[in-house]
Image (cartoon, rainbow, N blue to C red; front, side, top):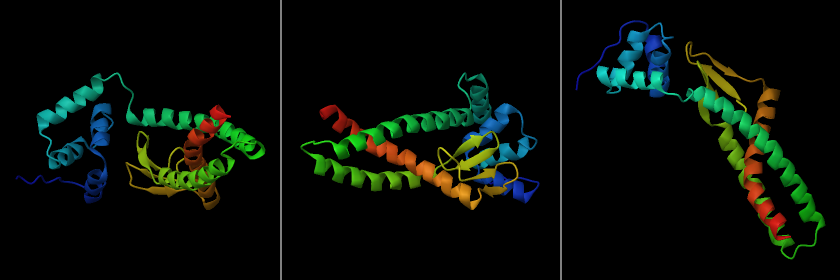
Length: 191
């Protein structure tokens, strides 16, 4: 196995080695990469041949699909809007469950309590999710980022403590809405 040596700034090499292959290919496809030789060197370290790199870059240039960071931005907006709608439904259905006389009211309340715990666990998992939030930024936390890393400089940025808590609470509400919706929809349809 041949060893590829990348010349130049060692910090740049380490940052490039930490980045996903798709992001490195996007850099080459967007032609916004000042250190193209270093990016190609890291891709070669990962076992990609020169012709293979060119084919992958050409596919990205010819693709009609938007870049991943654009898709993530649309997904974040869609998730927040759906969470508002589903959360409103969940709240109204839960109030109806509490004040109604359903035959399985106790079981549904128990399932809702268990679903609440699982929903917050799912929300915590969403808060630790990593994705490409912008062209040169990696975000942590979906749909609202709690921190980010600048992919060009490697600089990490964490939200202030109050904003961090607010973002984590909103991310937890997404998980909560996802878990409670099927239970409360089932109750709504059966009552």
